[in-house]
Image (cartoon, rainbow, N blue to C red; front, side, top):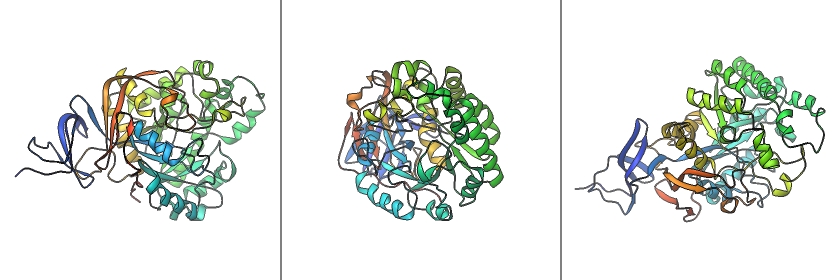
Length: 441
């Protein structure tokens, strides 16, 4: 008697933990139950994947969906639709919303809201403040919480923690990995007087220079080593940091943004103006080259988008009042596939950076690989498809991308979430079915 499944994905080139292999995958009750399914096996839903590559469901572990906030810019429903269209099955959302996610009440609201509003699965960062340090150990154990997030610079209100004494207190409150925005706030304040309002947008990279990032990272690594608290450095962007962090792999993991692998200063500021302004800033070629060396050397654990949408009006302000942040959740996977096409990394390394890596860093249960017992999350990609990224096709309400007009080779054509097709050929299917990602605590 032949085997029966809910879904069979057949004849795709599958990115398995041990390599690329043409095979068929059997899914039952939302989980992978078999690889190498026979041609006689039965299923009510079959996906013919011949000529396509089947990847584990890809994850963007660094997004700002602005919810609660301004729905005309972004929200959890619109942002997770964009994620599905971009080939993602899960995103991890930052806490600097309005109001921020920093206490049990706001966390409970977000947990309840996600399940019913999100089109893909989600993890939640909880923000550390000076006031909530005693509660952090309980908050980090909350359902769907991927990590505590610390803004050591570039934040407003209670989320900014810039001094070593308070940072050390945060590190001693709990045990799971803490994610850090690593720039030195004191140096930023000192250097601000060197620049005048209305100067060219390229001055942003001069103000927030490589030493600002490197100094912040040195301070955080010293504190992490002293307290023994695991760290995750988001958006590492300088050659100096990459050279330094190899000595701290026992205590930290490393994220690089697709922006810092793709856009090069000063040309990006000349082309994009305010739409190149983000924190940390886009860097010169030597830093981009160092980021790629770090990817090739295995120093980098994950690649994210730092999707941080703003209205066009907010971006149009003169520097430095222009809103810092770029959209990216819908373009992360196409851009990385284009880098694969150009030989900058292998497809398996992409899978490590966008699936296995985020799952490993944050302890996501059942995510990150195609293997029996794991969630049946898949991203199917056509490595030969040539497509043009366009503002008009962005699902994010603000309606723009810094990569508008760029042609890429490689495109996500389907996303499958726990055994159900959620996006096919640039169309989101069905109602929101996202859930909170489970994490080892």
